[in-house]
Image (cartoon, rainbow, N blue to C red; front, top):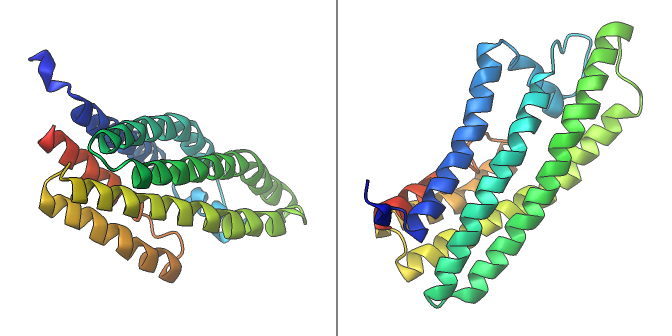
Length: 212
């Protein structure tokens, strides 16, 4: 393979797609092991019937390389947009994504440790510790609201900047922007809709590969 294939846009695109493969691979592994159902404890709360919530630990382990790959991909995208003459919007988008990634890392760590422990306690004692549910609601409520708002806004800005500069094919830019805007409706209408932050990075990643 010619070494010139690995241009900056293509490396950025590969990093974004790699991040999605990491997190989807982890979810697939949990499903194969029959532990997918227990992950609902993070969103629906813990009951004696929750079952095995240890899949949350697997997702948390995958979250670090997922976030690192995405941050690297978006950092390269920011560099490309900066060089193309659109520094302001790209830097704001990257800053928002860093905030979202920080909140997301905390939320994942909480569920991997506290939620899994609470599920084990509920199975053993018949109910989760009294402090757990209010804390879970705060993490999945106010904290997730801030994280998701930052992340979705960052994706809107990245999509619009990439489309305006012509960094990716026009139709993919419009698709990424449209989905990013639609994600707000999905999130606030159906809390935690699973694909809202996967489709846009996929479109941006493929677009950067095609135009690189």
